[in-house]
Image 1 (tube, one colour):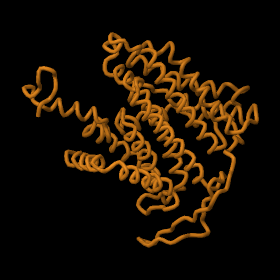
Image 2 (cartoon, rainbow, N blue to C red; image 1 turned 30 degrees about the horizontal axis):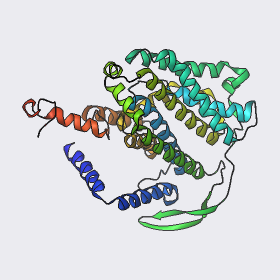
Image 3 (cartoon, rainbow, N blue to C red; image 1 turned 45 degrees about the horizontal axis):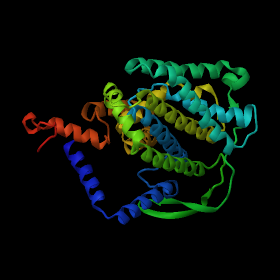
Image 4 (cartoon, rainbow, N blue to C red; image 1 turned 135 degrees about the vertical axis):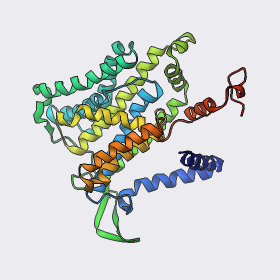
Length: 378
């Protein structure tokens, strides 16, 4: 593991040593490649047994979920095991307002879904965030299951287990068409019969939905970066590390915990809204408690508190089961073994935050190398 860690540290050091303009160009080039992934169909990445565009859409959707949950777990240190509840509320808000009880366009349904889930987060968080640790995990676990039971039994509002269909799609605006690449070994050719139109949203082509979800991911990543590097982010970090000490230093911890909870809920609602418009049909079986476990696994595997880590983990945990679909049920056994190995050999996650790495290195320094102020002197 030391070799892997040294490799990634070397890559990071070389990136930080680049001039500012070079880093911007590199980031833009990477973003363009990520947008074009379903068009390029890279041989070692594409999924042979599943629609590659649909798989990439799920990767982007769950990356959005992981970013929202990372705010709650990674930044504020609140263990939320019922995040699927906010995801479901966002999806059903779009279904109810856009199809079941109204005909609102999707452009109005998405902000409404975020607002409803934000208010739901405040209503849930106001009484429950006064408890900590395992007690909060139990309360949120119950919340996720309560939401599902309400969806099953609320026939008048949610149509019960029959679900909601004909959910509105985004308005289509055809700007241009891109032909897909086909690979014969290492030789690529253009397939003019297989094209994706930007942005024509239909049930036969998932690529425009992937581009839409990826755009939301980039916007939320930017806002996440701004929040983490602000006074709010520092208050979340202080609350997570030692809530009592933060309170003594004048940080209103309950207020900031509630802000993290509500922000995470709103992002969960946005994710659910995108899921509903892509599926165009939802029912309570889409929102079981197992998804909450999967969402928490994405944050833990990626590295709690590192936005890039949770994005990579969300994409990996979504893509891998589809890539190895030919293994049938054996892929889930291998998936579990890989997670156990990760928990044993790299418990801090694939890409832990830099502060965690620095803290671990400091712990590894002999006590006589730590000065009176608690700073490691190597």
